[in-house]
Amino acid sequence: MRKGCVAGRLSTTLDACLERLPDLYRTVIYLRYWMDCSVDEIAEQLEAPSGTIKSYLLFRARRRLHGLLEAEGIDYA
Image (tube, rainbow, N blue to C red; front, side, top):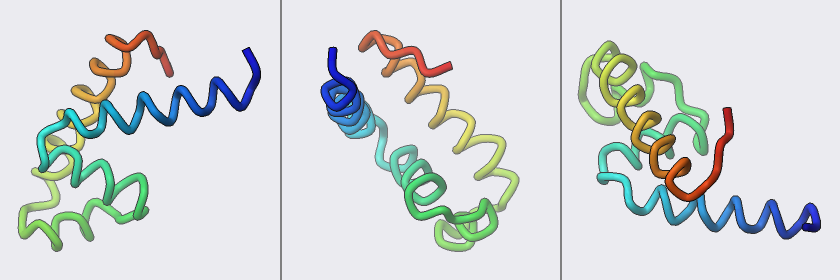
């Protein structure tokens, strides 16, 4: 398979998996990894403690996304 095809499939699959996340999980993933916000910046925007963002929301969002990607046959580890 060509490199562009693999990247295209990965991007499409990632987008689909992100859409299946609960809104709050999708939001923290987007802010952290697409907008490059710090945990403190995310906490400020969501009006939540930084510890909650880091230990609860980001952890659970990544875990859920990882499970969705694995179910689609994508192992990024």
